[in-house]
Length: 528
Image 1 (cartoon, rainbow, N blue to C red):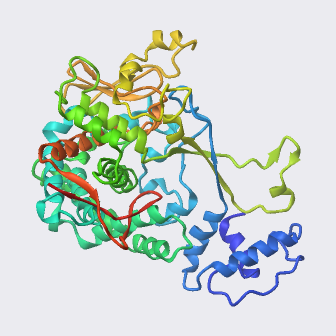
Image 2 (cartoon, rainbow, N blue to C red):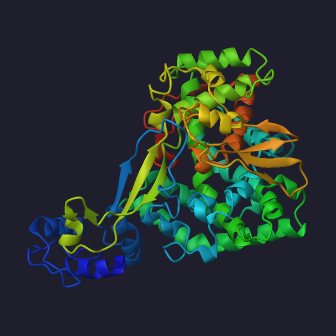
């Protein structure tokens, strides 16, 4: 039975939006498929639910967002002891059903319109996680300095211009954020970004931050996204065509250019997929705001963390960009520890089957005739894994040097896997040579973690379960190193220009949506 069928039955109970005041729902309410009657407590719960739906909510929104939201269950999974997630926990369509309407016009997965690697099971990504490797080809660490750092630096210069000192920072950040977002993806910024594109971006982020579809702010912004979705797709498609045809100057300084060059025949990364990735990254890069706020709050002079400030002082007083033959520079270690402790993405979501039968026989859900769709997801935790006492001796201490003692992705090979007690590596180690003219291969560790090798030199990541902010294994976030490099540039600017953060004495700071599930008091400012 589909959700719309449930809604027909729900309407008989007064569940849908725009109904009159509550009436008593009797126990003999009939299941719309002719099944058993609804018990008193279920009928009563449905009546109470009906009363809470604002009367102005669009009926289609109620059917595709509100009802699925309340029929979805989340379960927290175990903390991994190794940086792996079993393939039985799939990324295929691993998005709560109430959010599909933000990215698909049909309110449900429609892959013929394009898709994202972040919502694909490994079995659908091509051989050896090909889709992930093509995506990552645009974000390998060797690209940052020659292709992206100038854009990022200009963004931070504008963002932290002295004229913006001593005012709430995060609202100001959100006003400029889409300039760097679209400049990195498509080489477009400023007045070249239509108002409609800025509007949908901010509306999308607002929905992700507030989440609960019963809130008017979520409803209003969700409907803005719906209104502008086709416009956004068309606009991105035109900009991708500008890159493909050579009409855009310096196209190699955009993410989309590398996706186009490395997509091969397009079987696993079509032009529609490139368009889709460009706006699905609203989800991934929205976590930059949460990260930025977390860093500023820890460095705040009057309300921050003395240990973090001291560590920053120590790091930047030395040769912070010199790795001295180690896998990471001191500044990179500092940023990694910031992300471990801030953990802007608290977990990795997996789709799981709804068990209709249990060890004790038929489930109550089935025996009561409640055959409407339910969705269940399991969260592999990042935050609690990063703070596990089984993985770190001092998980709550701020210690950037901790990563010197744990393996990198370049070290997890067949021998290492056998050394830790495995019969073989969980993933075969293979290599993908990029097609954009660079001497870069994209390989993987024995745990499935993808990383780059530029001119024969590995550019690894920390392949240890205790460093969990970017996920694990074949599902690890491909934007990890780009994000770390962006925040390294931010901290270089803070240090060089002697920028200081302070909590502002505001009686009633504004509330600002800064990332998924994160709405904060905008009460931090900067000065020199």
